[in-house]
Image (cartoon, rainbow, N blue to C red; front, side, top):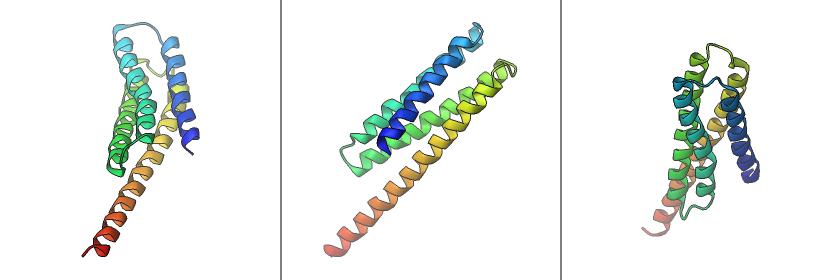
Length: 129
């Protein structure tokens, strides 16, 4: 699953790059494109950092950053969709769908990690009254 997520994160960035390369050059598009490339590329970088987390709490915190960056990416996709007046709707819909799927996976992972952390804490407390 880890390698599959790394691959999907990377593919998302590649598709964002292709979109940005095809967009007409304007000040607004440039600002939105710059933000989208930063947030979408940050998803993969922060997921890799989460995979190297030093603790369960560190893992959760790094995945929360991944969640925030994906949400920001979706936001800028929405702005680009508006700014380009529907010219890239098909590509943006596909990118948004993938971003939402990844977001769901990461939110579920965060929730699972939190449950596991809480369970370990309860077990530890019951062993050491």
